[in-house]
Image 1 (cartoon, rainbow, N blue to C red):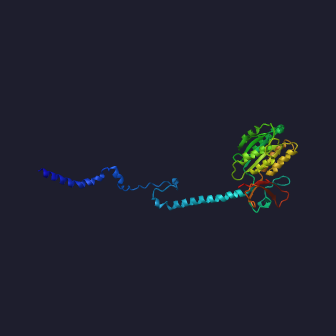
Image 2: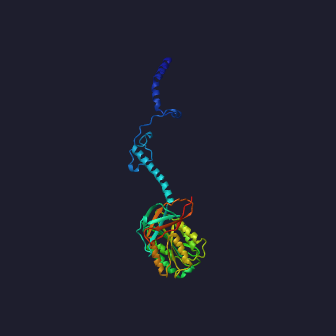
Image 3: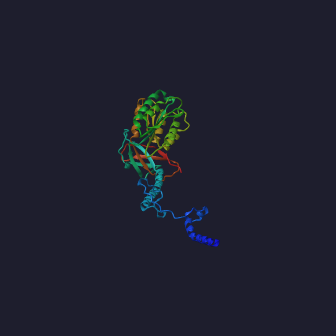
Length: 371
């Protein structure tokens, strides 16, 4: 009887084995088994809605299609176009830099024998000679009556001009009020005796410039060359310049120097390197003497004018003529013959053709860039 019961139990167990094997996959697997087992296929991917066109990033991968397909044709064309524009821009920038370096830009004025400004001349009316060689082509030419200005007012505050200092200050304030245009021009104020003092940095505020002029106090010796050298180097050479701009320094002094460390020629050289035109107003009344000759030399070398007022009240008239000069100019650019980056000084001579008695005022030369 016992053997019969045992036989029936074994038969029942054998019949249940397929059911146990079928349900085994529904149970959690052991860790080692889970690692070795081939992963189940992923569930179907739900396609995300397309992003709005305004927020699409052309450089981001497209998650709505397999990577092997790549971006759609429109996106590929846009990406190719953007790449080619960028490359062209880079290639275009290289020759532009070379043209800027190898071209010389000159701003100048033309007057007749009565010192009246001539403003109706054309490119064909001028001849340019660079380093004793005629320029083959004037590459650009324009009449400029509205150039942005970067102006430095440099006033002698030494003991030698103490008796006329107040009037010169007020004349300078009037000049700045009439010349500097807000949001367009920039000016600064500096005074000098044995030291140079900036009483107002670059600004377009005529109110601040006037305060800077009135803050000057006379006293001490005269270091005029040092002052001109420093403002050209530290304020104008280093100032930002975008496009065409006319840089000028108005130097009000008697021309006497007894304290400078640099020479007159070194001060002129720095003005040329900074592309600065220097206008001088003599405070010697009546005019004449060695000081006026020094001021004239500085002005002529940089393309400016030397004013020698006969009496103190003429100082205001000199400022007015400088304002007119700054608004009555021509600008041209050319590429010199046999130009070399050797740092050498090269001369410039511009003459007016076809009409007699015209005088061209421009800087006498420039320094070529060094390699």
